[in-house]
Image 1 (cartoon, rainbow, N blue to C red):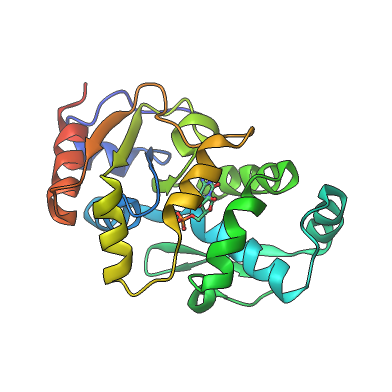
Image 2: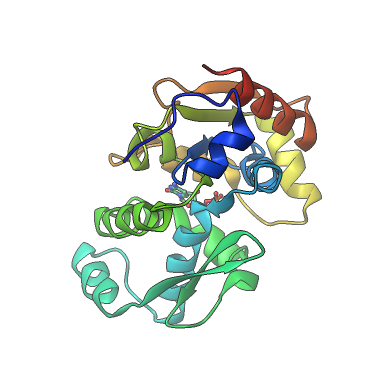
Length: 227
Ligand code: C5P
C-alpha cells in the first residue's frame, strides 16, 4: 500500500493519492464521531464510524436471539450473516442482510450488548477484515477504539481524543442517551484483544474544554504541518 509522506500540499496530494487513512481513537463521548465526520467533510474523505459496525452486529445478535456467551455460537452466526456497506452522504453505513439498522444502533439494549460482544475474537476478526477491505483505494477518516493500534497501525496520521469522565457523561446525558459509558470504557480497555489504548505515534488531544470545530481545526492544522 503506497502512502504519501506529507500533508504539506494537502489538496494536490489527495487528488493524486487514493489511500490516505486518518485514524481517531478514544473512549466513549470523547468527540470522535462528531470530529471525524466534520474532518472527513472538510477533506472530502469517506467517514467510517467503526463503532457502527460493532453496534450493527450487536443489533443483529439481538434480533436473531444469539446466545453470545458461547464463542462457537458467534462463529456459526457470523457465517450466515451478510454484512455490506452502503455509502450515504460520504459516510459508510453497515447493512446487515440488506437492512440498514442505523436508526436502532443507539438503543439501550445495543449499548449494553455491544462491548461484551466486541470482546469476542470471532467478532473482532470478522470486523478487522471488513474494515480493512472497506478502506481499500479510499481516503478515509475512521474512528473507533483500535483503529490506529490494530486496524491500521502503519498509517502515520493517528489521533487519540479523550475528555474528563464528568464531561463525557454530561455530553451523553445532553444527547438524551441511556448509555453507561464508563462501564463500556472499562470493558473496552481491559479486554484481551485490541483493547482501547493510545496508539503508538498518535497525537493526543484533550477535548474536555474544546468544541467540535476547535478539535477538528487542531487536527487539520496538525495534518497540514506534518512533514
Ligand atoms: O464508538 P461507539 O461508542 O459507537 O462504539 C460502540 C462499541 O463498539 C464500543 O464501546 C466498543 O465496545 C466497540 N468498538 C470496538 N472497536 C472499535 C469500535 C468500537 O471494540 N474499533
